Length: 163
Image (cartoon, rainbow, N blue to C red):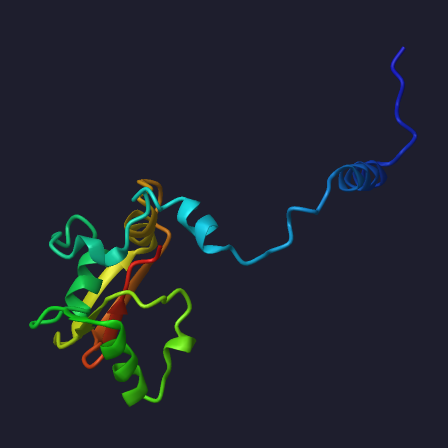
């Protein structure tokens, strides 16, 4: 003979959720800062996550996001290398200090001053996924963004290795 539960559907759902909630722990859910050695071990340390500018020589048909950023943040003079003392002096001239640069420990710094003319480019959000993570999303469009006359001239980029 068929037996029916005496609990209503919403009540069964609530009891199930309560039981599931009581059986899990939240000890590992709290965010915390990672130490340098832990940062070295995260996904991407193996090169599986690439920076969007890594495709500077890629044509727009390969990844419009990467090539758009590469065009916007280009420099006709390239990067110059700064010693720790030169970097500190450069920051001081802008009213900053190396103490404000997390992860900087006296490494040589590559300084690039952007002088590219303004660019207009469009990209799908999946282009950002491909550029930043290497994921090859091929599903429906997630939306298109158009950057019109994006002007990064005068921007100074400082890059140093993270150990």
